[in-house]
Length: 605
Ligand code: ATP
Ligand code: MG
Image (cartoon, rainbow, N blue to C red; front, side):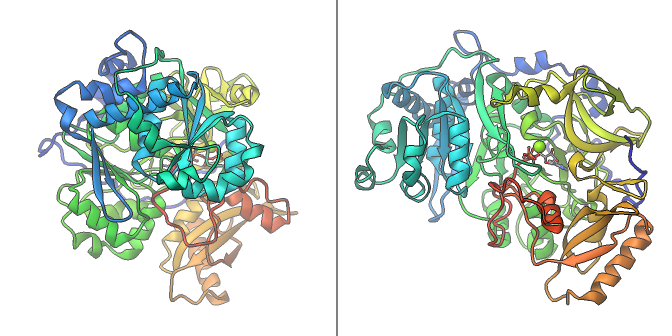
């Protein structure tokens, strides 16, 4: 299958300065880096466990705790109540050793699944790395999940241990504890009195205080299971993607090459560790790189975020399109009113980033927003815009050195055909074998197998590659629209709708039509102060027709107060479609509540 040629006009490339850098980028010449990079070399940037093998906790914590970095802040916490605390690499080593000893003391065998349900509090980070040190599998649960998504994940993952807070336990777990037979230990963060009042639980802080802190590290190898991450559930029931300790080779390499992490950096990844971005880049990659990682417990608020960037002198910032679009709405002046002179690199992931937002970065931060692409399954960034490479606004950039990406079409179950022609559109595929590739879907071997053909991992996303090797996101394979012989990717139509001054958000689906096959339908959130009426709908339709022609432009536009999104910020087009057609709504465990989105703190790739 190949899609129609794109019809919208991309803004010109944003050139990067060459030669003069105050802080030279890690990756200066993309083509050269691609030629010389090997994963074997990348692995040499790490230590290996003292007894041989590989363990994320050793590489991310112990290696630095035993070096001149021991006294440097590893994690700096900005608590909801305004307190600012930190754990140095040495303190993080001690705390995570204690956590591993706590697990051992409880009789938890290595290889157990430890779920953590918590806001971005220090115990979450200690539990994550302590679990890995113990040789068990860390699986984060997003703290805003209701009881059902928690129950289904803990059951599917056969969770033996749950780390959570008194408040979250009471609100979401206690009443269904009997339905979670695998759960042997619940470790609570709270006051001793609060915990004592809850039967069948342990006081985590008391256990940590009493535990020894002598070195401990499980004899894991690069292939030992380390992480269980559930996908966002955008296209259906969330899948449990399994990752191994060896993934840290990719976390570190991508942190350095795609995010330009360097010694002395203060790095802020706004994603919640409940999703894979918040673990791969909110914990593992920055610690592996030995930088200081900022953890903000609070929610998105433009003024506060800018204040935080300025006060903490953040140098590298990784956030999400939903947050960026809200910042665009708040205006570039607000950004410029703060001293963001320390900010060297801004990147985004999670959803397509429209070209306008990329260019807006230039106005607000003196640099474009660098979009990059990956998935829960890939474990780390696969396609990126790099600090030293010209940016084509609207493009995801180019594959990481060490990653081979191609546009393919499946010819049968076992084979694919690579579409080499420039701008040919098809499924985005990655040559299997990079270190952070997932090693299975939990209890769904068949589905895992179906993701691979001919040595390629098929991503389920549609894309195209231009003549210069830049990749452009077209849409998810499930969302593509077939109308009168045209194949239409929703993202391109949505991006164009977003260029209309009255449009705040847009989502596009195909609805069945006896003549055309499908017709393009758009759901639009109007900007505040705009009358969302028939006249505006007609104006927007006319605008889209001018840009796209009648075949691709939406035939109908419905105004809605908000778009249904996953908690990680992705538009749930399948829900719009199900509602449009009166079909069952399917798995809604990750649907965001109808409250306004606390966007930014929750994103995934
Ligand atoms: P599910 O697999 O359960 O449907 P999901 O695919 O949304 O959920 P994630 O792994 O969190 O779960 O998200 C990865 C997906 O997000 C990608 O496959 C892609 O569709 C989208 N995505 C991520 N980054 C980008 C980007 N930079 N541009 C466009 N799309 C992106
Ligand atoms: Mg997916």
